Image (cartoon, rainbow, N blue to C red):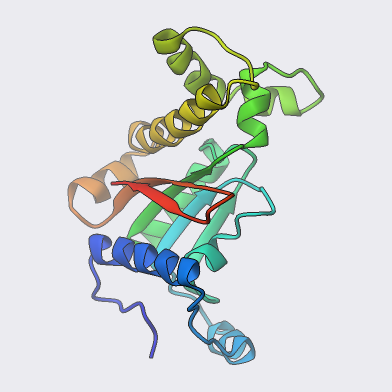
Length: 203
């Protein structure tokens, strides 16, 4: 039986992500026949959520939340920020395909966040990091400037980046803002710890 059902509310869908992470931590992932899922989803998809995460190879969202093929959209970019392209994908996921949860997922010891903190200048990485700089500046205003050697500062920027991008969705997408206001969609944030596997949610 599939864990996710069409009639579930955004909050109920978020709960399945929390429960899935607990299964991941306990080593009790659900058995899935991937080839069966390939055939089942070949003719269409009805994901219940979209996760905006970092490209970091150590945090595959489907594994961390114990999801299968067709359960979720997965938008990944270094530093898990939202730009016009990602926002278009979010609108497609929610307005066109019916996803009810938008989850912004940061993680500990993020290389993109550390590069933004250090204001790295390197090719196309430089304009990419500009998307994370608002979080760096916000934390620096409260705590003073620091480098990526300050782990607490980096962690604070990573969390701030999640929160700012959740707000950015509402500010820049009237479509999503209306869906959130109507209770059709929920936006939540979370942070994944690379050492423990634990996901802390901000909802």
